[in-house]
Length: 87
Image: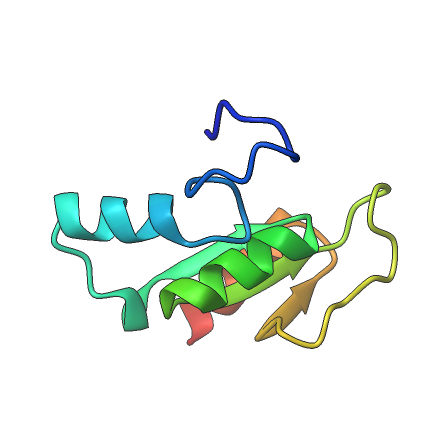
């Protein structure tokens, strides 16, 4: 989690991919096989910026905001997981 505020212009706040890239390096992850799941467009953009696949989960907060970057839009987390398993 980024501890900075939206106006701090840090390197770890989404949609910058720094934290995802650091995790990939620390755990030897192949980002082309990783899914970023989130309920905000910034989650999707951060995942795509890191080279991962991105799933947007619709919630009461984001309604129908699909964002053009999402590889898949799920109604809920269960649907997102089912999509990954089926891939």
